[in-house]
Length: 304
Image 1 (tube, rainbow, N blue to C red):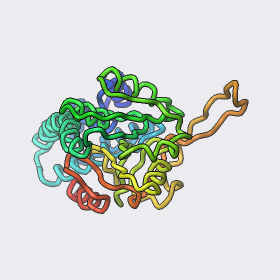
Image 2 (image 1 turned 135 degrees about the horizontal axis):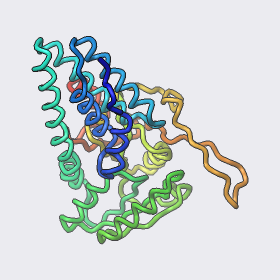
Image 3 (image 1 turned 60 degrees about the horizontal axis):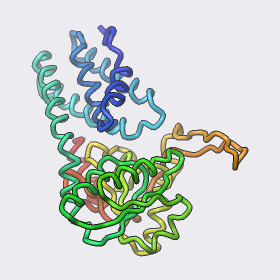
């Protein structure tokens, strides 16, 4: 029997719509757990087939599926291990649901754990450059401010999303001085900053990161200016990809910008880019502070 009338795509997108703090990989795992609750399969092979189909539906439901895929891969690997360890079908099903609930509880604490770790690297009177909207970067900055650390933040405009304007407003509302700068002014600003702090859509096997377009060029500038480039990411965003260049990323990551008064041409732009590990100083994760070379070891622990 298939997953019946349960619409895994709608459930997933409703989760994200109704909870702005929920990240894509966590929502993906929550949706797969819900599939298990609705599934009435009578054999292990049928059960696995339904879950694999649901995982593929989730991936195809969004153009930028990298972090979503990380969550699906992590949970499907756990499902495979559990099926091999438990021969009783109902006991396996119950265990997967319970472990899913436990994962949600741990995931809820990830950002605060990372905030505590990463805030140690922010000193008084620091000037920080951030890029795009990242819930975990915001959590880190808010925690540092709660420790009475004084610092100011430059936020890139972060086109095409333009999320930098919203991020700067949120920081100012929290009492943190924040200024929006054009993406094209990042090199000019770099000499003024003490460190660069970015989130990640996905952390790949070699310790590089996939994140909103513009992250790679910031990393290059930071290295040229001898500024630390820190990545902040939850471990459930570790993904089994090994890109060697920008063009090894999933191809369906482009969007079209509509013509504007200043530019009569529509512009094709990728959503994300890839930053190689040699440009990354450290990663702040719920597993601790990692060097890029340490990511592969943690991926092995998570998936095997």
